[in-house]
Structure formats: C-alpha cells, structure tokens
Image 1 (tube, helix red, strand yellow):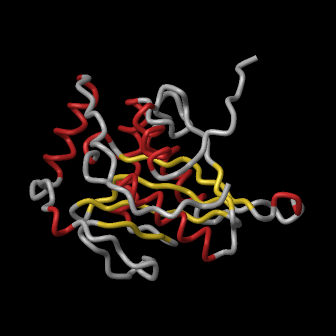
Image 2: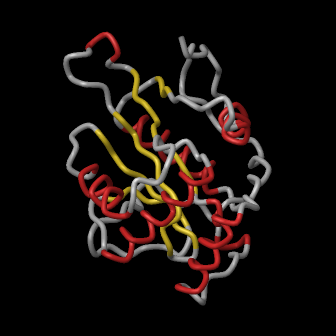
Length: 212
C-alpha cells in the first residue's frame, strides 16, 4: 500500500463537543486570546514543504509546521490543545489528562527522540494540534520501507478548518522526502471522523487489533 496521492475534497467538519468540560476550556482559551476568531478561507493556503519552524523562525497565522523547538507560549498552547483532545477522547494515547507538567515534559522530550519528527497545526497563530512521523529503528531492516503516523490530534475548539487533513498531508510529504513508501497508522474504532478522514485520503484498512 503506497502513500496516497490526494486531490479530493476536504472531509466534512468534525463534530464539536457539547460537554461542559470542553466548553469551559473553549471559553478559557478564548479569554486568553481575545483576538482569536474563525479564519477566512483565504488564509487556509497549504504551506510549502520548506515552511518548517524552529526556535525563532517566522510562523504563519494558520498552517502546518515541523518544529524543532518551542517557545513558552507555543508549548503552553500545545499542552492546552492536547488536554482538550484527551478529554474528548481524541486518541492521543492518554485516556485521562496527565496534567500540565507531564504534558510539557512529554513534548519537550519528544523533540530529543531520534527517529521522530513533530508536526504542528496553527490556527490564528495558536498551536492547536500535532502529529508525529516515526521512523523505524535501524535494526528493523525488514520494515525499513515503512514509517508511522502517530498521535495525530486537533483540539476540539479548532476543528472544522481542515487542519487534520492538511497535517496528514504534511506528514506524508515528510515521509516521502525521507524515502518511505508506506505510512502506517492506528485509529480507535470509536473515532469515526478520523476513519472517514483517512479513508477519504486513500488509506486502506488492512487489519483490526483484537482486545484478547
């Protein structure tokens, strides 16, 4: 199964949670960033593959970036987004929010792990999601042609802008640039919107893991 070529329409907007916890977090997010509004369609142009961001690099208002360092503001925003996604059951790995200290340590440590690249989505200048491109270990020569897309999420308050789709395509570009021919990913069966997204991009469901 090769990496798909994508020319189709963007998927339907993801469902916004109506639970009280998420709504409280949305209001908190809005209060901290009073200028945050829904962007116009003209601001949603896909960034070129070279538009990677490091410590002091210029950042777009809305787009997808590969990051190698965090500012304090970006790290706080990404932790807030991850926290909201975990509460909604967004498939980030945790079932319950681990707390801000644990999330900060996780993302800071992630940048130090060989074989992983972190891509983030930004909406109106604020980090609202991320995805990881994971390369196979060097001693796994049998799977040297395949990489993994892992821990992809977009905060509930930033869904409906096509960021999940664009982030997936950006990870695909990164995988192709590194010479990989296959991109694997896992999705919980309850994540119907994510399943529709990936199948719409040409991914093929090749197996289901048993709980036994």
